[in-house]
Image (cartoon, rainbow, N blue to C red; front, side, top):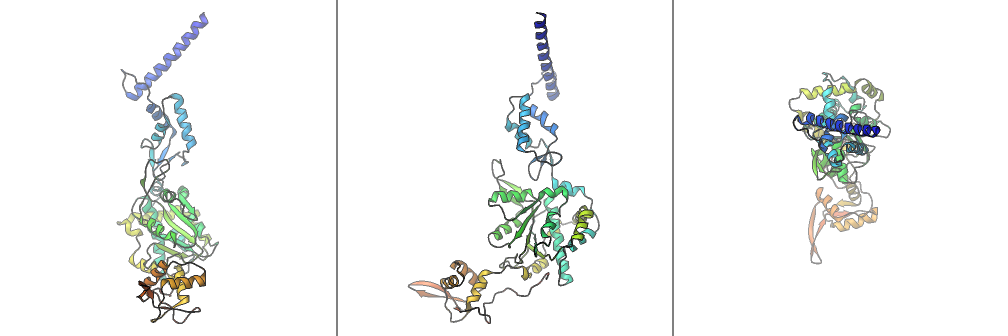
Length: 437
């Protein structure tokens, strides 16, 4: 009998202690001594999650530990279950809503790094970095222009971090394999930002994935491309001129606008990285890399990667108009537009000038040209594209009537073999400029 009373008393004492603790906790939260509050589901979440020392990454919109490791789905599930053990009324939605709210401490990884480094009034390591590319230039003027464009491309990282303006300059390294092109780009950022370097061979098939990649990366490297023409041309042009991209993020309820942080670059074994129709080139900055100076680059990496970023920060801090620091000037556009050795070969131009010659008495329709090209090349060229090309290079044309219909013909004559003495002329200059082999 005594034992039973003792057990009953212990149980009552335990219940009383729990109620008392709960009451004191209610007083601590509400500040109301007269009416202690029972902890709500939100109170339990608000007590538990801040103790985990998470931060919300403003770039990726992901929750991270202080060591920068992402909080994954398994960990979120565990947090939810830990809280539910204390309060059965807690929903998982409340936990995830709390994690993706302003209740967490926020941080911006790019600004955090650039704010932390010291501005250095020097260009020693910036000079070493550019010279490590080991590029042959025709003259000092070309060297100076290319170095200026190289610095402008680098200053885009500051523009990205501080939301200064469009990141519309894409640097492309061309040259033979094993010249260190990819290694340079993949190691240009400090280790604190290395997780924001994304290397791809091609853009993802899903446009949403490609846009999200642009907004979650600081450096996007297109590795080993065959050029920037074809289906990539319009997409790259659009991306380079946009500061924000619209897409629906994973688990997002609707489409939203996100800032594009990625600075673009590429490598190619081919020289033709500027499209043939790009007359005024202001977006693609190509450099031919013969063989990088690995020793000089390694010196920068080991002794001064924070130093050369500090040198760039000094340039950034001193400028009154930040946009001018990375805007391509009229003179630079003119220079980039004359780099004919980096222009892609126009296949349409090649085949038409190989099998046709300008002739004032000639009468070739686009269909005639298509039939001849298919016979010679076994490729099916579109009459629309043939017509567009001939109009673009201003081939003389006229109209006639055939079977009651108006037909456009071009003053061309079909020839039997590659004709070298009088081919069609275009506005393209054949004089190469820029860095040479």
